[in-house]
Image (cartoon, rainbow, N blue to C red):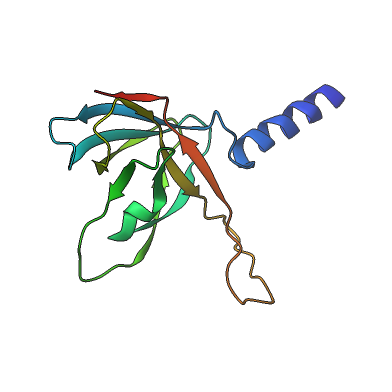
Length: 149
């Protein structure tokens, strides 16, 4: 009976626990470097966990959720009239494609990673009593190293 209880506890923690590093992966699917002023990158965000992940995103300023580990590269945003927060669902064992544009400010060979600030939206949102705002935690998910040139 103790073994059965332990197995149930482990399964529940896997299904309803916090995001672990292996749960979500960000992979480079395609990169077009013909124009260094507008490098086109297609990424895949994969949910390897056994549960659906609900995360925060913006309709226009999505570029604020992405970063690079190299100061010579910047994420290029887009201009729009209406920027609203969204919650997106990434089902268990599924993936979604993301298209980004980058600008390289260097003409030398360089390496970099792209990161995504994954802000999971929990079922029950805690409110900070001092600031009266939601307590949401972000975790940076990084691609493997990317070589330019």
